Length: 361
Length: 219
Image (cartoon, rainbow over all chains, first blue to last red; front, top):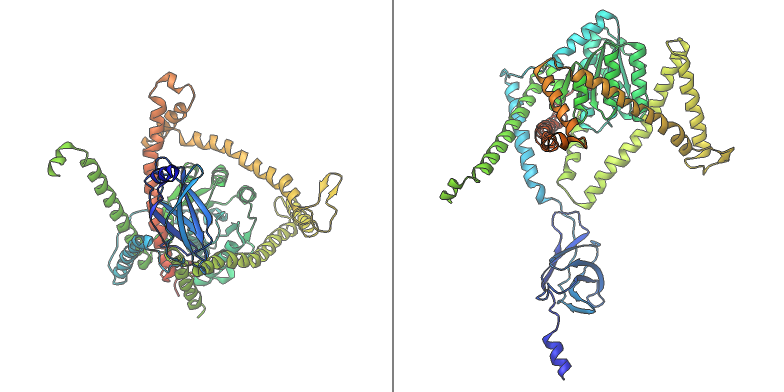
């Protein structure tokens, strides 16, 4: 009798308010279980989560330490589950009431990305607005990018010297944005080299990039009315091995002595190997990448470097096409908006530290 | 149609490529995964044949015309044939038909990779140290205000990370770290913002068919 009374007094309190729900904004396969901590939370080891498919036989599926109030369970979307949470203390357990049956589901929209989607829509609208302005014939001022102004000089120099131009797109795959930007620039440079009848060498490091680059050069020559200039051996695949590619391009630079080297695309550690070798041959060098860690190497070893978004703007800048220039204007406005938001947020952050502002609270 | 079809394809695939960022549904994620991985892998398998044909043609032409260093093209062609035979007959880890171990040499691709490609790659990577020295020399010549600033910052960081830096001044290591953490990161973030916005703009231009340089420009 005494034992029953004492165990009633010192009984472990179970967690309360246990509820399970389909984990939101996911692709299914997960249920979240939440509860309120046990009254004995400070003395227990933690909470064991039990799961049942039929509501009778429960099996432990997870454990979290004391103080925690949530657990995410991996599930099968085709089954319904019932959950219980138990507080554990030495060999004692105190089970909560079971939850109603619940099933996990896939969602079609991730609400946590809604702000990102709105931001992208606003930014895209700004770009489209400026493109529309350009379409109407409004003159748009674009700041000078010396690296791109030097393209004509580089092509002219190669023509005068009777030497080829080397265009390396680095080691990026075809789906890298830097490679895509590089394709756009390659098209413009191929047109210029075609107009001057200067040889253009394009060693590539990815078979898909090679295939696309070959078509771009071919199309560019066809566009300027000189399809006969296209030589399929000038655009070629070397290897997909990073340093073997660097060695091969170094070899081309030392043997063929190009008058101008373009390193535009996705580069990693080979950037400096290529740029330094190119510098030693005396070629005019123009580089561009979105790899922030490689930019210092290019800035050091090349004559001109397209930094970050200049790489994406290059095609528009070279072609001087009004619609493309409109897009650059939209990008710049996007930067102004972000920069202004950063300045305002920083100012608010700083000002709230001043005691005088507390007077207004 | 020759231009309209690729533009339509880019528009459809571009939109399909954006959607997975906002649609977590398992079915769509699986479709996207297949598109990104399986489809690109199949494309690459076909493209590599074209790539290898191109490589062989370039080197065959080099040998035929006896261009500068044409002898090395033989090394490439022989290496290509030998590794191709070993790969086809020996497999990746010697699981195919060739005897896997002859006089201590394993006839498989992994052996070739570990004993030839890796050391050669490491050799090229090691060259970076020398290139860094020559590039630093060029960058640190105090010719302008910018390069003088670069030189000063590099000097402070190089001294600041030395174990003896705090003997020179107790503030030196923290000042070096400050340069790395504040001005350096600030500049990097500025560039990163530009890259992100530029990436979106480039994608938008290509998806909407405004950017057509990859098609040879406007019709």
